[in-house]
Length: 317
Image (cartoon, rainbow, N blue to C red; front, side, top):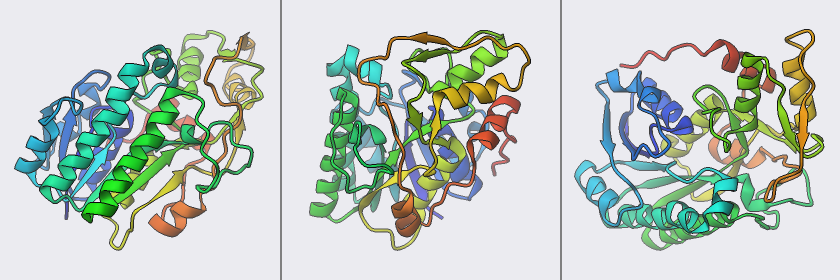
């Protein structure tokens, strides 16, 4: 079994990834500065003997390297980030600090202290409004926001370090992740978590644009499994892969799924499209299947049922 250091461990994806690693018998060193992460997301992990938590800001020079030197992890899963396109537009300097500068510190920590593998939370935002669909990893990279540009720059930083200094780097290009623990109170949350909150409260959902824009929605439990494979599967080589389902759902379709649950549900409210938002996004999952042995198992309907009804509580040793 491996020791895995997870940055952003108290976040949405980080907490699910930590839970799964622990359930599979790995030791997890969790790192979070709690800017957006929540301790309650780690309620199961904190009761596990295989989990340790460090309150630490990855963007502070030297902080992560010191911890890596002490813990000597086999791999780092780097999930700590500014996760919002809209916030990156409002504060591009913060976006650079949290998404580029912090990734440089991860690369240096791995180089200095002999980490064998780094898994990086990249994004489909690096593609922008790609002309081809489904989007393959070789597609032209045309980010339309500081967030997408920062993720692309961080990929290059990490892959360059890995190639030069001899450690494996996997860039996970997440498409639209959804599921339990995604904060619906933030204006930057995923659309499904916001729709779910409106559904619970009997309010109409707000759609920015005409609602015909499409997304490749992937359940967070599948994303956690992709991270596990990228960090621990033997023989994995450096590269990048879309973490997606290969199935597109429009926002109008999504609103219809929620509306079907309640007779007389309010019609969606439309607002003008937002700057930096991508119109269509659909990934090709073939590379993740070939390189990681990963295929998404949970469809949108099943994932929505888990989000609404709650998942099974993990049992961690």
